[in-house]
Image 1 (cartoon, rainbow, N blue to C red):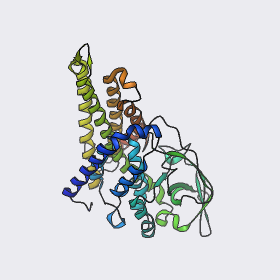
Image 2: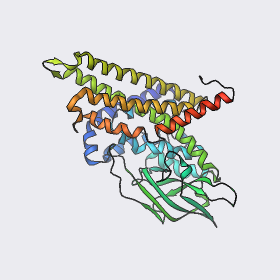
Image 3: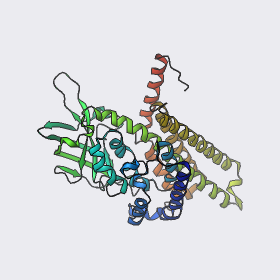
Image 4: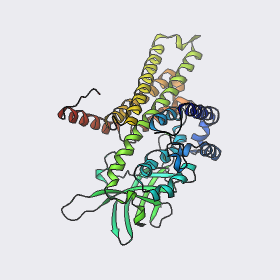
Length: 391
């Protein structure tokens, strides 16, 4: 449960919203042009506790729970998504591995650094042959006296060029006749044998740094193994990805809200033939579709976050919600460009950036296709178990 009461949390959300609107939104063009988050925005975000808002208070964070997390994510989604990426892995998929599965020593060592922003963490799971489905993972960890030796490659790793800590997943090869297991390790930046590739050039989300990682006989101690148990890795990955899907869904809603707002403003002010285009019924129809989709997505996220927090559903609902909300954001962004007409295709327009930023949401934390598989399989399982598919 959260250590922040509702009244205090409302103040936190308002402070973050003010910061985003007054300081981040006006600099979206700068972020895109420089492909970087300005240092002063990073310092302000750290001072506000944004690098650790979902990290427990005993380790220096704000201790917000998932239902509060999504309310902040709505705000973060309103501006360039790369801003949220700066601290998203600390609070999300990387930090939550430590929060949920780390030993007390591992938590004490790393979580305060993540919460303060002194250290940025990266979640190193994806590989050339293992994306949404980690079963194809080829990176390996071999047990040696006093520790482990890791070899392999990772790709599309968010914040890798900035990271001070890598949360790394690798297969532990089994004894003959047994299946390999996936373990997760803490690998500090600068560890011999760990190489960070050049910064990736992407379609969108300028300012968010991703790159490849190469592990060549990287040696870590026994204390680097999360929870001290080889079998923790797969369970940890699935758990934090499910939570992350709820967060990404909320980001998608925030992005769609911004696209809707830009569309309505443009339609109300821009004229064709002396008449505001917002007076045209076909334009109004596009705005109506955008608004309906945004409302549905926001309600879905809040309900899913509630059910995740209570423990009622931490599998089907996160996947169904990510599927709907990220596809919804893509549709709303597409309509936003259509409302703007040719102007919406111009680089200086916010909806052009939104259109490109939205596309990635359907890929990470599991593609839309993976979410469909998860939901479909879970529905069939429930029926076979005599459970309701409507809960």
